[in-house]
Figure 1 (cartoon, rainbow over the protein chains, first blue to last red):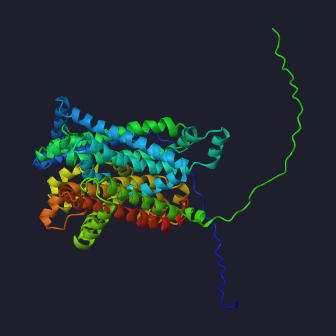
Figure 2 (cartoon, each protein chain N blue to C red):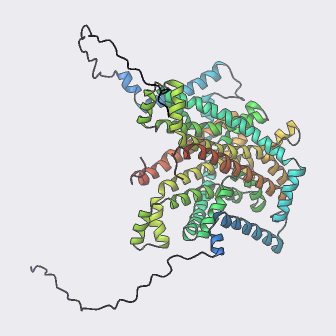
Figure 3 (cartoon, helix red, strand yellow):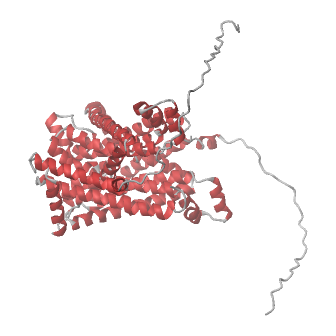
Length: 296
Length: 299
């Protein structure tokens, strides 16, 4: 290669100069006492509560100020009154209990089946292949799409709802648990073998604790799918199962054009969702994976 | 008290005769059968074929009613007939059109929300309050309200889809942005990046695994919501906009109402097929082209 066309960097020589004077060094405030307002504003809970309050105020002001038709968009206070009235009059609590009961039955049945499948998958390659094929096929299938079939097979009633819920929980949990088990490090497995653990004790004492973050993630996804599926199923066919649940309450209110009832039902759905996610699952996480130092 | 004195145990001496060392087969050619069984796709396909055979054999032999569980062969025939003669593909396209509209608008809103959240503390507070409240709310529960506000039509479904996409995407993007390491942030600042360019060039690539996870969850929720919404109100929409304008969910529901059970199964097959294509072709390809290529995800 010729060197003639190679660019040679130019040397730049800057003029020398002397700065006239060095100013006094000045350190601003090193520590300032925050004012009470700033201290209050720095509390997370206060900021979030005030945002919530702000939203409620905007809602109330908009509906009252613009005189919006309550059939289209009721005021916040009206919706809250309806919720409290229905809770106290004993109209809502049995419906909530119905939904939660169906959810618990479906969820636990789904978990048991998932556990059996995953046990089979850890024991044999055939089981592992079966789980991989079945989850690839059924995980993308929305559980609610099975509802027409479920009604055909199990009739109108709780059994159909439970079948659909099992379907929504099973694949998400099985997929996550199976992936979690496969990613358990060889070291941990060898420790188990060292203690001569085989079969079910090996799974329970080594694989489950080691893969718990992944299993919990699966359980959370399963819960989210199940909750969505249940509300969807009740919205559609809840009426036929006699008493009906929370989804049915929402649908009934919307059919009767009692929009404040729809909002009351939505409040309840949000409340249950928040309780399950932030109280139940959060506590399980705190007691297990957080305490074991597997998750910050 | 007498101190315990350990007893000395003298074991009898033994001699073991060391046998001939034998290390069996070190390497052996696998038989053709073993090689075949070792291939993943072969095993999985045979499981699928086995399931179909069991299904077909059960329905043929037990004489179960076609109305309860149709034969696999009649389901396949129904699927073929629906694709060729009954505009099933148009219905799939109707569903996908609504889904894509809702998904894209949802992504835009989620992007705006999460960008606002990383710029200011107020935005971050608003986002976390809203997601904590609205993420546990199933989108389908908003459908009655949407029908009231937007009337029967695809607008209502798009509204519920928006709701099902925005919160998981915004939540995951925000968590991802918060977890970007200080080093990468400082690299960005070193290049003088600020505002939108900073977000696009530093934060988004660094948080991409989280963002992609949010996109996948958003897709899963949206797909479930869409099918549910169409199962319920697809008929009303099909009525107002002419035949063959309902979606895939409506195909399943209307055939169930007509007791065309093979067609119900055909519809379910189509739902599975669309889901598998989106998850295993589209999202896996995005993963391979981005986070796997960048070495952010194990093989």
